[in-house]
Length: 265
Image (cartoon, rainbow, N blue to C red; front, side, top):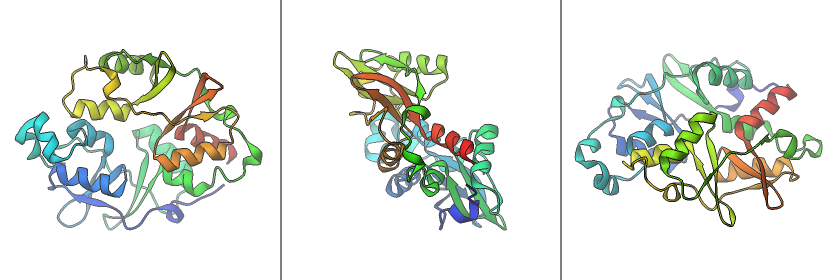
C-alpha cells in the first residue's frame, strides 16, 4: 500500500489564530470534532500545532461558564499563544503517508502531519485519517482482532484514585486502563481522561470513577478486524478493550493497526 500525503490530507485546514482565547479554541475543536488545530499568526503562517491533549490539560475542555467555577477569570483570559504548543510537523505532500506518520510519531510524538505552501497550512493528515483512507477493515482475508491486539490488558479498581491510576499508567508506559468493579469491566480511563480531570483542577486523590469513560466500547477477540476499525472510527476513540466471553484478554489500538499497515507494506 502506497498512499501519498497529498492524496489523504484534509482540506481546508482548521486553524486558530495565536491570539485567540482558550475558550474559542475549545469550542472550535469540539464543534469540528477534531483533535488538532494549526495555530497561525496574523498573516496566516503556521506557528505551531495545538492538540487536544494540551488544551485538555489547560482547560479540562469545559465551556467558559462552567470552567469559571474551577479556575477563575484569570485562566479565561489566557490565549492560545500562552500554551506549550507542539512544533508544526511539516511534511512534503509527495511523501508516503504511512512512513511519514510513523517517523514523526517516533521522533516527535506527533500523530498528525501538516503540508505548507509559502508557510501557510494547506492540508492536515492524522493517524485516524490514514486508517480510514487505507481501508484496513475492508477485506484483510477475514482477519480477526486476536492476532493484532496487545495482550495482557492492565486494569485498576473502581475504587482507585486519579493519582493511583496515573501512577499505574506511568509505571507500565501505557495510555489506557481498564477499570473493573465487582461485575467486571465498567469503564476505560485514558490519558485524555486524565488531562481533562487535571485541567478541571481535580486533585490526585479524586475518585477515578468520576473521570473514566463509561460504558466502555469493547470488541471480541474473534470479531473481524473490520468491526474493530469501524468502532474506533465511529466513536472517535483510540483503543478498544478486547474480550473473550467474560474475560478481558487485551487491547487493540490505532497504533496496533498502523503497525499492521507497516507489516503489509
